[in-house]
Amino acid sequence: MLLIQNGLLFTMDSQRPLQGDMLIRDGKIERIAPSISPAKDMDVLDANGLHVLPGFIDAHSHIGIAQEKETIQGDITNEGTNPITPCMRAIDAINPMDSAFHNALAAGITGVMVGPGSANPIGGQFAFIKTHGRRIDDMIVLAPSAIKIAFGENPMTNYGTNGNMPSTRMAIASLIREELFKAQQYFANQSSNQQKDFSLECYRNLFEGRIPLKAHVHRADDILTAIRIAKEFNLGLTLDHCTEGHLIAEEIARSGYPAIIGPTLASRTKDEVSQSDFKTPGILQRAGVTVALTTDHPVSRIQHLPLCAGLAAREGWDEYRALRAITIDAARICRVDHRLGSLTPGKDADFVLWDGNPLEIRARVKASFIGGRQVWPD
Image (cartoon, rainbow, N blue to C red):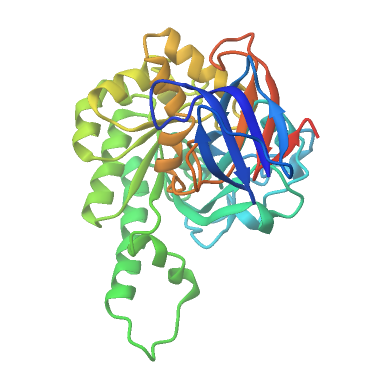
């Protein structure tokens, strides 16, 4: 057992932090109270003067797939030879030895959604993993956790410039619709003795409502096309990047779909990200949209996730909401909030000790814990 004493606990179940203690048993949070008396078999850590928060979550990343300090062989983010690749699984490409995992832990990030890039209209299956481990199977929280779809410049550039389909936004939407219709018909007509189709079975969790489509969308029209298609097939959806989301905030709110904003710290290298702004998450959240943040690592580096939340708060976003976007709201969007995202009894003991407000540039991580075990510094 581990007892954290005298910390300022930001549980994320309440806007008001609690000065008190937290008891960890068997990798889970067992109890939170103003004071817990230590027993003989407890390890005790005095967190006096420290902020205790849930481990942060990056809701869209390519960590371990687009590896740092590697040549072209280390960046295997996109299978750019076929526009429709739903069967690809992130867990078969993530390298836990990527040095970026160390950077994530040093920045208090203990959970990430990881998956393929945006070269393909349908790109494959994301996985939600923890950021510490040597064997990917031991790091998985949820896999598959989403199926990637992509709109806009990236699929058109990857295929259209080579004379292949898609070269237009219409073709992207058409390819996605055709594939989803095929999968819909497959499940509707399936009988007990029907031979399973590997290329379509990968959609089962999607059509049964357990995971969402994860849409790469920047421009307002692409955002609305993604919503239109998801509604047509009655599917879950997250709007990833959502760069021009602030221009259609009310429309997104009415859709009921959440948004994952970023990588706002990156440069505006494409026409479709010209409206990128740290004001976007606050505008969307105030309109009624559930919001998380992404670094889109390595587009911007994963350790800058708290900085992104801080910069959004500087642009008028409520600080508590900014923290929720990288803790409990991110966990809910990623569908792992039953285990992560808040300091709540029964949840995984993934938490971080900070020497100040994590949204302030001078704040530093003193220690990161996953499953009640200190993993940084190790």
